[in-house]
Image 1 (tube, helix red, strand yellow):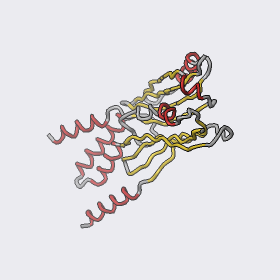
Image 2 (cartoon, chains in turn purple, brown):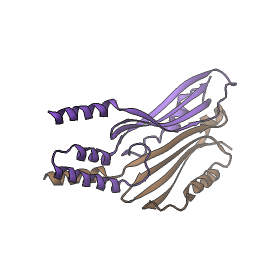
Image 3 (cartoon, chains in turn green, red):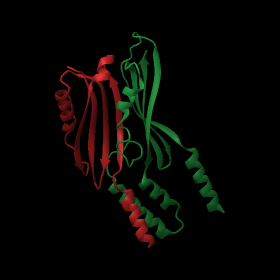
Image 4 (cartoon, one colour):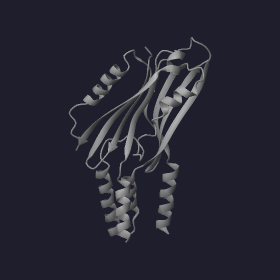
Length: 141
Length: 104
């Protein structure tokens, strides 16, 4: 019973503890003198998953010592196989933000754009996250 | 069988992860003609790093030089993306530039 309670509490914290994290923001020139401004937002996102962290969590909640050791070993292998600097959780597709420039060009029929703000952020739920690139701006009408 | 499955899972999960650190879009002059008719160019430069030994970031300078060469009249819009492809005890840093060149 205590283990079940612990598991439920752990899962609740994992799900309720989801939080947003800002990694980078850039604000460009704003020109309000050319006409009426209409705001737009373009957002692309990808599933982020930290497999090593998931294996570590698994090792922490494993019932037997041998399973826990195996999972710790798996976490070590995953960590050294995915070596390098990370912003948020790793993703399995490095091209998810490749089309933002074309999306921004397409979004304004007038083709006049100003006040672009680029945001790199993430929404984390334990070892899983939504890795987001968001571009906000204004079309000049 | 269970261990083989676990090993396969580890191999699959350790393959080709990446991290996009920054992706920013900037617009220059608000010329309707430039955004409608400009030529889009793609530049990608990278640097392989083993065990964290990094001595320079020349690949960024190379990307910038190439941008100046390919857009001699300047750019009207630019997207810069900085990312890392992870690997076994090594990684590859990349800079990707997409730009809309100003017409001659």
